[in-house]
Image: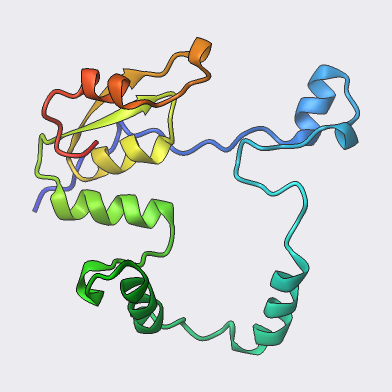
Length: 158
């Protein structure tokens, strides 16, 4: 077995904090809202806080992984079989599972630039190659079918 060379991989670097940006720009941090790291400026909903309190005594247990009840309801809603439904733990997990299941060494993945960094990271972790297409700031970085299809060159994942 030969370990993979991960030296080309860049670690995820989160966006700068509000305090740092405010200090650098001479602004009041209370007047800034950070949106770069999927942080909700409004905090958790009261319902979420209540659910956490209600179930805090069970956080030491792993949650069920099969999600059969949710899978069945989604399948019913969309009139498909439960075997056609996939419930994942989040965006990174979904992208990683998809890359792991479909990529062979050297397969290409087409990703937008700028875009969600984990698309390219996951492709590289699973021996894939990354092909990028540019999003235009003049168009508000819109991803439309024409842009994606004109960039498509047979990549395994788009």
